[in-house]
Length: 199
Image 1 (cartoon, rainbow, N blue to C red):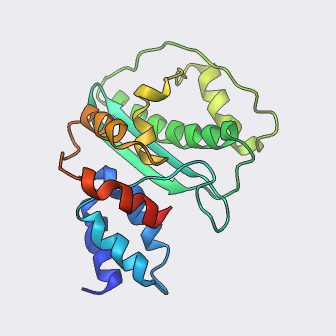
Image 2: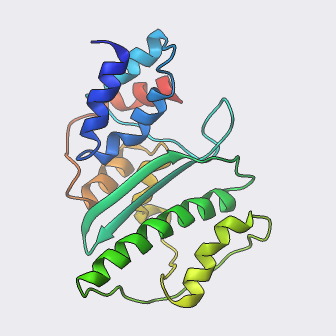
């Protein structure tokens, strides 16, 4: 199977397998001229998974935003995307990801309000983000209007980490198990080699 064909087939699977989205998108960046190790990585996606971290792209040092939106305990939307600009700090990268997540949540909220559903409100906000571009401050505006809530989630319980950085195998499988939409599999033996190949 040709490289682009494998990418296309796997992109179809991301509708039900969000845990492969980041590594697939990383490999898809090399469709124009894939090397041998890119082909090997794509073949391993069928058996293994990976993720990325802040400033993880070694070429341009751009960060990856990973988001997931849940309704009650069900995952209903997710994304893993390379950010358009280089983030100067982890705070900035997370603020950009939060803005992306906010946009998706507001869309979901509008849809759900058509069905008469409401979101809970528990506001907490901590930030030192004056240097961040004004276009991302809509997140703060929506928080202040009461449209959304911002709460701190400790890393050990941060489900979105599965979309943003390489995790230890145990942490990955524990977080993956939080979401019943993700298919469980035996991948431990391939885990380290796949991360080493792509990162």
